[in-house]
Length: 204
Ligand SMILES: [Zn+2]
Ligand SMILES: [Zn+2]
Image 1 (cartoon, helix red, strand yellow):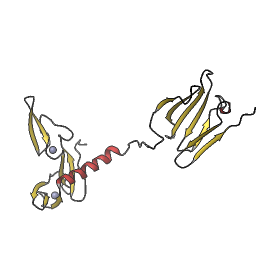
Image 2 (spheres, rainbow, N blue to C red):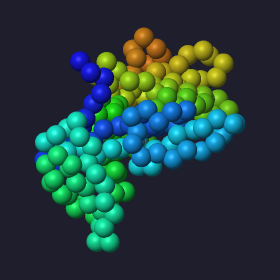
Image 3 (cartoon, rainbow, N blue to C red):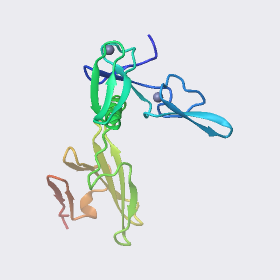
Image 4 (cartoon, protein in one colour):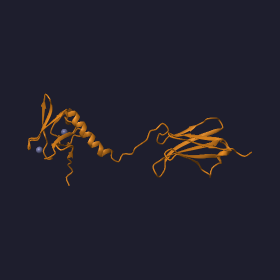
């Protein structure tokens, strides 16, 4: 298999990335429209069309000729003589770059930046001298967010551990830790579409 790729844009226009896509180089490679700049006594080649070259979809090996018309730019296939009015070359290059981005971003991770969620935040808040709140944000095995909230009473070493799962709408505490009723009377978590409340009334 060849390591050269031609990307099909539509029935008439296909395109390729030239050797100068993303970089300048000390030779022009397969770029057919370049400029040369001297840098540190060495010739550097830059592509004049952002590293994107247009080919005929019916004859993918053939690069289209480029004509600058006063009505707009025209591409012509030297073999089948098909003429394509493209309006602006810049807009066509942008269209090609968007197609390439689809390939780059197809498996991208989606990060939800709601007001309550910033990945991997860790902070310590001291609401009163006696209590300490510590938060930690992780993801569970389903990829959903878990906010872990520790509430501890300073000096005792005891802590209540809450697990808040915003996507699942859950608020739970770890039974292995301190019973929340010992230090908390009520916890309320406001999510986008609901409010979770747990109240504790310790028997005296
Ligand atoms: Zn080029
Ligand atoms: Zn053609």
